[in-house]
Length: 85
Ligand SMILES: [Ca+2]
Image (cartoon, rainbow, N blue to C red):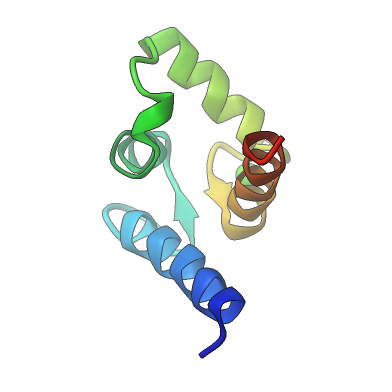
């Protein structure tokens, strides 16, 4: 598998691992997102509860109370651009 294909598969697998913890397997609840951030992006760590809430509502683009795969991918892509500057 190419590196990019591996990266895409990992992106999806990571989402599914956390999304599957509670409720719908297709979406991340706030608790699942916070878990994902703390474990997978420790560099962003040390966020307060208020910051986590703000972050979640920022990612929840359509404001339905959960973060779906599209919203998650949009975030990771934006983060990739920011981090490579
Ligand atoms: Ca949403």
